[in-house]
Length: 165
Image (cartoon, rainbow, N blue to C red; front, side, top):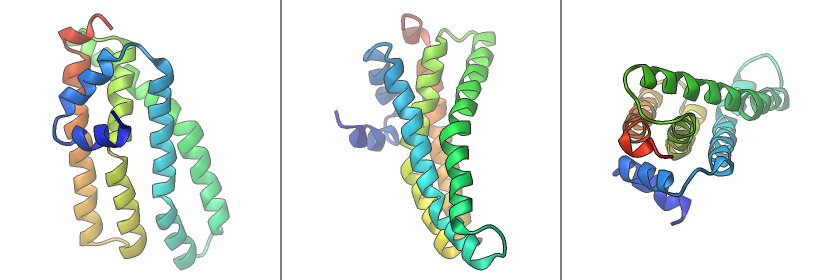
């Protein structure tokens, strides 16, 4: 199934989508592609915000801001997300989670990729409208969407069906 359909389905049936990803087997290359694709799209989501800041504020020019964001999103953020997945798995294990380090990464990285459409929308709203009610509404949708998918992903990836992966 195309990844765009899986992303759309993740907002309605996140457990089913994550269970399908788990059933596909242990594919570290796919999980790495999820996190790198998500980070690339999160970098793109920052463009309108950075352009607005470069235009309205004194400080570094747009290309310097973009270079910093590129470094942060494509080199540092994936490492942070790997560490976050490990911490969440360790916490789940303490509370009886049955998943593996791989399933924890899969759940978090898929959640990041699945919420990138909302994050792209948030970047556009932040870039075009700036701080205000619009940004707060879309930002709230991003947070709710992220945690909706991630909590459901944790339930699947740390449940009994994940123990064999």
